[in-house]
Image (cartoon, rainbow, N blue to C red; front, side, top):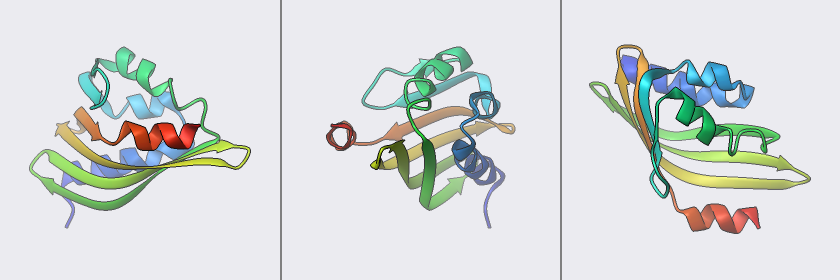
Length: 124
């Protein structure tokens, strides 16, 4: 049975295809930290907005395909494939391991581990 934290993270992952930045930011605490591990962490909702806006607008569609998810207390680990459809037949499929910390009913930390070269090769 999924924990409350797992349900929140799954709802968050399932919200991405709607591409609504305000809806996505609503899942975070005001002081949340989002860290794509190959890059610098974004601290706070406005910094997170800035990071999300570097890739969300370029995607014609975006889907997080969750392969595995497990929660322990307020921490959720998920293995997923982030699928970006950039249009014109160009698609990026990025394997990701995500770690989320949930405080109350909001995400307070989100760390994604992925290989930047896998992303860059598909972008070119």
